[in-house]
Structures are given as C-alpha cells and as structure tokens.
Image 1 (cartoon, rainbow, N blue to C red):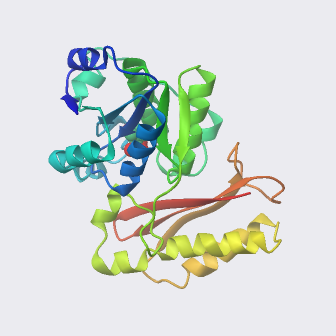
Image 2 (image 1 turned 90 degrees about the horizontal axis):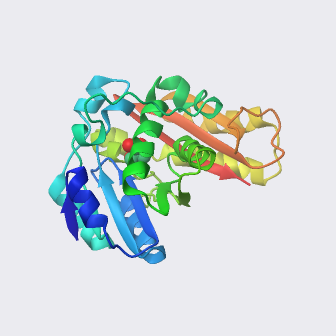
Length: 276
Ligand code: PAF
C-alpha cells in the first residue's frame, strides 16, 4: 500500500492504477464502518484510494475540531487490512493552497437538519469533497448511510456537476445497535451504555410505519417517546422527511428518512433509518 502526502506524490502514485478507481474519503480515526467502505470498494474496483484529512472547513465549532480524534498509525493498518492500495494524507495547504477562494454549495438540501444545526458545515463538506474528487478523479466514491443528509447532499452535488458515481454503503453498528462513529470515543461510560437508545427509538418509529402508520408526526412522537425513557440524552431533533428532498413530511406516501440528532454530555450523535 502506498502512503503519500503531497499532491505531486499522489499524482505519481495514481499514475497507471487499474480502473475503476474507488475513493473512500475519510477524516481518519477509522473504525469498522470505514473498513466496510474500503472492503466494498476493494471488491468493486480495480484500485482503492483512501484520503485521510480532518477538514477544518466543515467544523462550525473550533473546540470540536481541536478534539477530533487522530491516530495515523492505526488508521494506516486498518486501510492496509481492508484492501486499500493507496492512502493520501494531505496537509491543509495541499487541499487548500494559498489563495484558495472557491466554495461549492448545495442549496435546498442543506437547509434543514444538520444544515440548520451546524451553519457552514455542508459547504465545508461539499467543498472538500469537490476538491478530493477533482484531484483524485475517482470513478466511484464510497460514503456511509449513517450520515444520511451528507450522503444525499454529496450525491446531489456529484449528479449536478457530473462528477463521479457515489456509492451508498450501509451503516455499521455495534451489537447493541449504536452506529459506529469516530465521535463514540468521546462518550463517557454511562453515556456509551445509554446511547443505543437512539437506534431503539428509530426502530420503534420504523415498526410503527411497518404496522401501517403514515402520519409522520405520530412516527416522530413514537421516536421521541422512546428517547424520553433515557434521561442522559438531550434530543436536538427528530425528523421524518422525504427521502429525496429532505422536506419534513405530514403524511408518508413514499420513501422517507427517519433521523435524529442528540447529545450525550458534550458529544453529539446522529443516526437514521430509511422508511420504504
Ligand atoms: O464523513 C466524513 O468523514 C467527512 O464529512 C468527509 C466526507 C470525509 C468530508 O470531509
């Protein structure tokens, strides 16, 4: 596995790679969720590149950026184990060279949910992903369904700008249902024990939908009722939105994304399931 840092090294390492080339963009502190993205790319592509870059532009809170976990040596081991051919670890200047003055924004899809809670976050995500796509020029890029709105926003951008094929990959969960996230490491022991309530709540909402409930506020209430059984959780939102537009629904008549954001102490977690 090649490990490269500058854009020039990356260019050389990409030269002559088998196609299709798969890209797995990450911010490091890799876990089994990333491993499954790399493994899927390995199965489906001629070569797999992984980028590891903690993107300052997508953090609305400097304290959140400062405490973002990092672990290069373990990340590289996981990439090699999972079947990556190349890992790119650029510096901030490699990604945003002096004079960088471009922002890529997806409009309506970024207004609700995480976009409302974290101003500027999605412009940071789409700008960095556009830069990564532009430099690596992958045929396919792999993203997890756990960040449901991010996935839809990147799909929209890639389609609108004719970039690359975006491949959706299922959320990987702990045996107790907690979605894997680099942020889980910050959970205190009691909060970690309580956090599976998020998935239980979403499953309760989905069970109501499966049983025939189509009133979106009844589904949201069902999710909120399960969350309310856990005193350690501070709920930010529960959403039942159109799966494509992410507009909040009154009645569920087609595919929907049931999602939530909640805090356990200082740690903010998100999760979602699809209805239909
Ligand atoms: O999901 C992430 O890890 C990041 O938002 C991404 C897509 C790598 C962009 O920095």
